[in-house]
Image: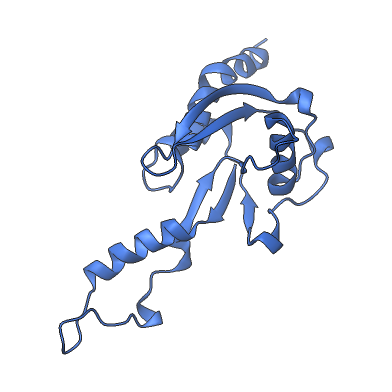
Length: 171
């Protein structure tokens, strides 16, 4: 999973912040914000699954997913190790985008870089690990800003992968 700043999330939070603290000038128009009054950048941080835009028609979805995992997380995962979970629509009120979710297990041997995205494209991404024992709590915590994909991915993992891992530990 990754953590990154999302301008749209920040602007939404800034709008809420400004509507609470709105001052008007002498003409009754909203006054310009003082930078000191702006909410901290941290309100624009979200937790997300590693993802990317499908903009390379010569590559399969799996190959694009492999590239995104490498760029964002620093792991070189063989395409054969990617398991398609499902496809679904997101942003149905604005874009109607189709997303495809994959599952991959990674190991330290696959770590070939720091990840973090491509700074030249404005990406500043932090890789985040959530212990299995905390994953359901993390997914259900409304105070942690996350995408629906994170919640679905964690619940899918709990239903499909965690039981197998736990049964192997109990053998």
